[in-house]
Structure formats: C-alpha cells, structure tokens
Length: 94
Image (cartoon, rainbow, N blue to C red):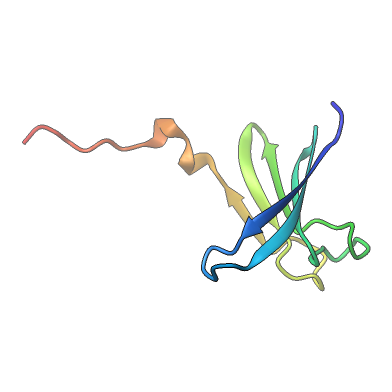
C-alpha cells in the first residue's frame, strides 16, 4: 500500500473564524494526524505525529502523545466498546 498524504484546513469548533492546518498521512500501519506546529518526542519538528489511529489485535484504537517531552504515549483509547454490536437498545416491553 502506498502512503497517502492529505493536507486539510479545519475550522475551530468553538472560535468562529479561526482555521488550522492538519496533515493526515495514511499507510498500511495506520492513520497519522499532525496539526501544524505539533509533534512527538522522538521526531524532528514538522515531521512527528501526536495522534495515531491503528488496529491492534483486530481492535481499532487511538494512540495520543499529548506531551512532546514524554517519549511514551499519554493516552490510549480502545474503541471496542464503540462496536455497533455493543449497542444496548431500549426495552420496548412496557
């Protein structure tokens, strides 16, 4: 699989009018998200990635390096609980 790079401009969700640039890189390992001016501890400025979406043992997860001075990730969000088959439907037996 080839690497794909997307450069996007996103509007601030709270502050109307503010726009920010984000680079999204997709390869066979995952989807890497790098807002302009942000990086991780082990990468040079402009080349790192503080957010990664990947699969681990068949489960999608988001890995975040929320502190540029910390080598290990700061947050790991396992998405197994967001699986559609986990949805609890309302009980209609009133």
